Length: 458
Image 1 (tube, one colour):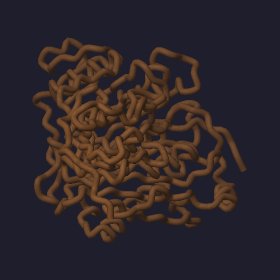
Image 2 (spheres, one colour):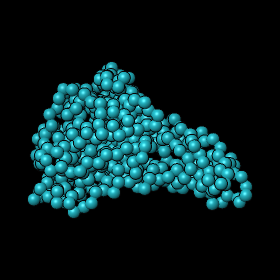
Image 3 (cartoon, helix red, strand yellow):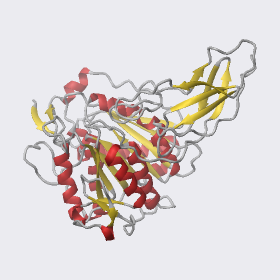
């Protein structure tokens, strides 16, 4: 049995609830790559046919920062609807940029991957009341036991979601406001009141506690803001309703319109990661198990939801409860840059690469991403002189070139790009020395790594 409905983003899709089990029976489980070896851990749950439980299989992969003694939270990177987006979730925990955010705050980085067939009902997982809430919390407990960090089941959450993942992340705020430090909703929001045309979607209640959770509604201008009548033009009306409901009651919610993109994620991570960093810095308790700290509001700034200028609360001339809420001056400055051209300023270079090894003519190394701007590429030096850029030209159809490349739902491509380079022009018999320099997406270079020479032949 099937019928047409409009999803959380205002996009028409096909409901195949009754046939979901048949669709799943026709397809094998997702190929699960890359492998989850420490510091990565993974659990997978099969689909359930019990009422109220998750009707799709799901993988949860978590990255634990090496050396962390006690986790203070978990950053969740939630993909969107559709088979392609669901599969892209398999690499979310391997994203170096999101790992930098998690590591700074002693947090785990978790990425789910729901095995939703292409034409099946996304609401059966992106509405957390349909079993994904319970599966997620079970996953945290099981991954905590597997990784030796049982506190993972109790720590606060910082949620990021795209499209149906935004619906899910917002829904989790409404269901568990005391657990959520902050939520970034990219191109998807939960439904707070019945709306014409949005059938098949259950309305959420808006508890008072959810008004204290910082949230950001983020979408592309081509999703109904300046471009109307497009496939994704229903995204802005849905976001507008959600924003008005939450902000109208004093909720700490903002709007950031991407001036370049549509339903893809564009350059949003260059605002999302610093924004979540600011929220985690303000809200995470020092001791695991303690309640979240209330988000400070005395330094907030306000801005028109679709405007480009922000002002301190005391100097804002518009209606405060119709204005986008921004936590502080630094985030207001970043917001104004993002909504104009997405070029968020960064003045901090990335960390220098480490553990450079040379085996024969092949170099390998390790590197951490710059918190503000991630990693774009590496410069290889031989004997103190420039040798090569790795990669020669970055690829990212949705925004700034990124070393790991990006899929539609803001996750690295498969197979993962290795930190590796082969010097095909090395002089035989000559002992060369090599250094590696990291370059972030703002073009800033790290200090060079320590010099490395080829390992002695065995």
